[in-house]
Amino acid sequence: MKTCKFGGGPLANAAQIAKVLEIIRADKERRCIVVSAPGIASPTDQKITDLLYTLVNPPCETTRREAAATIISRYQAIINGLGLKIAFRLWFNEAIESLKHIKADRRKDFLASRGEYWMAQILAEALGYRFVDATSFVVFDGNGIFDLNESKKWARATSLKRKLAEAEGIVVPGFYGTSIRYGGVITFPRDGSDISGAAVAFCIDADIYENWKDVSGVMMADPRIVENPRKIDALTFPELRELAYMGAKVLHDEAILPARMGNIPINVRNTNEPDDKGTLISCKIDNDTRVPGSLIGIAGKKGFSVIRLEKAGMNNEVGFLRSTCQIMENHGINVEHVPGGIDTLSVIVANKDFEASRKSVIEKIGLACKPDLITVEVMALICVAIHDMVETPGVAARLCQSLSNAKINIRMINQGASAISIIIGVNEKDYEEAVRAIYKDFTS
Image (cartoon, rainbow, N blue to C red; front, top):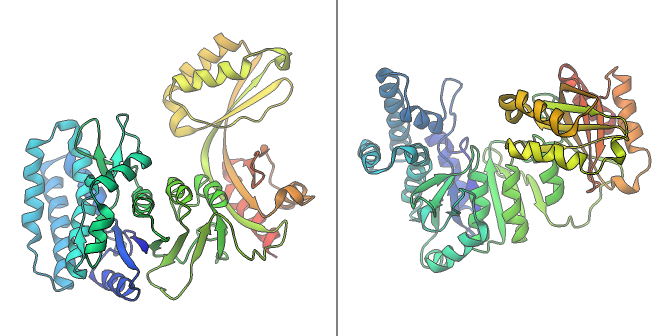
């Protein structure tokens, strides 16, 4: 039994969806399908989800009408191209009419979810599969956090597996579920359809989760930075999570958890090259032929702030780190890394979380911890995942030499307890060149 998730690119227009239909029909085990909303079909297109968000609070009536017209036109073109008899405008009008019965603060999630809702119904009609709404079993708790175990209970209570057994197959819209608190639609974060795809696989006890995109798997580096990077044939769940969290955007990092809990391998595939085996992610790589010390992958991103604290005798002051992290927690700021020395501590946070409360955070750290000096710098972080790094001497030295040869200064280096990767901090202006230098050195 396979759960197949198709992203926005493969569902962007009728021509792409025809490839999706062919892929599904080529394997009788592909009977549980999860879909995104249509993505970008051409450089002039907008994502359907972005257009739906525009409808919530449009800057003017003209913008609202244009967004609505584009949505209707895109979906009707898909329907006509697939030879289906569906009057999409009626579906659209029903959704707009439903807003009258939904609280104002819940309308955004409801409208955003309609992209996947409509796409799932269209694909179900084209395949002759049964449509199953995600709100029947994908559950978010009272705090708006996706609850995997509760979703599994709801799937059992609603006989999801029996519905699948009785039908040719099922199609489930991704990206949203039901809120226990509100009783209505609630969405995952943007790009969260990958998470819901993995959740559906977990709920039906799938043997494999195929995630179909418009790329042939996970690459060793960002192809926008490194020209023609090599594809990674196989990864473990921890390796992919490290890379995905640090910016490898082929798969949402939270999509890994349901698959890992259910011991369900993930296979990232390309709808435009269906014969390519893509990248297989699993608990353990069988017959691993990778050489110890070889590069698994590189990922990273800009936009981190380093709050550097200096204080004589810091190492003897009980609670210094706790007090600093408590201030971050009180401001809703996630701490990414905390490298330090005897009398120094660096707290690394994402700019997007830090900037809004920067002044308050610095003042409260000053009052609570009384450091001799507080400085804030901006840098980029690069995650370098190395196979069997903990048993391979000289990996850190090689990384440092790679950047030294490229005349790039290392601002911070941190090896986590997982021993899968090393995190390197560099100036933002050096980020792309640093990635290229490391990739070249470890693959040549």
